[in-house]
Image 1 (cartoon, rainbow, N blue to C red):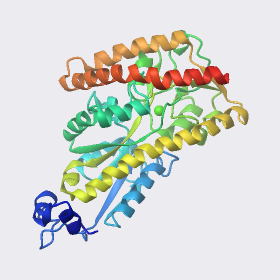
Image 2 (tube, helix red, strand yellow):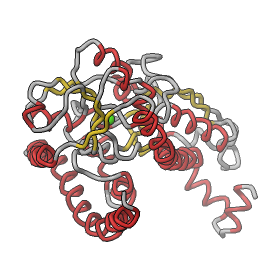
Image 3 (cartoon, rainbow, N blue to C red):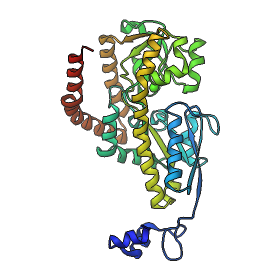
Image 4 (cartoon, helix red, strand yellow):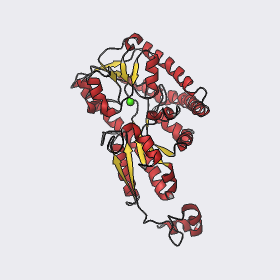
Length: 370
Ligand code: CA
């Protein structure tokens, strides 16, 4: 059914379509939305080109948009450093030298202190809870408000699920063992380990292996087994720690230059919105499907030693996390609003996830002996 027939079936008529859906540049002479205009956009990413999950997901997003729009919106994806360095993605899209970007909001903490809330915060939401907050709990509205100040429109467009706090050559048996260790850890997790005595280092993924191998850093977190195996950290570090207190369910972002987004016709906007939502879930599904096989390969073939962070270390990190979050938002009206929204949603959602997911997983583990 074409658009005119569809609208007339709804009783809206063509005139209503003209009011609702057309701007001067996108409308044909009869007031219908043009289906012939084409866009060729650039999507710059913070990830190595075609990197599993993080880099392949924006490629799949671009392919889906191309198919759904019948070729009208043609997006070319660039890996880190192909057009801009990874940590310049935000600025490149903000000023419009690329129309779209893919990365993580916590890389932009220097732009605004509230940015990390839209990726993940220490001891924060799981992927499922994060999606609930963003899409049905007020998070997206706050994210829109923050990024509008940088002429950006953000979407959730991927999630790795709970990460791993990383690769070490030294066992962490107490908080004292963190003292002076140079650990690659982005976002607020880095600030937390600093309070616990470590030295946080910010590096893009593509530089991690060399930095760890050469001793520039002593330890590194990246993502989880599926991605960490690809980088080969098992060749240069002995211990692999869990649980991922620092990134319990990080959201990856699609950012779009807001001026260019606002000029798109509604149907192309709807296609991008739907494709981003699909990519957001699809990336999580990929990690869910791949992480376990990679973990088994690390342990059985490469003899990686899995270690759990001791309870007293986790307790100290939780205590420091609460302080870091409170200090971060203090005196900043917008960040305080984000934190209040986060805390309110956290309280409510946790009340139920503990009754539902947590108690189910505990029961399942007890009954199957694992
Ligand atoms: Ca990470």
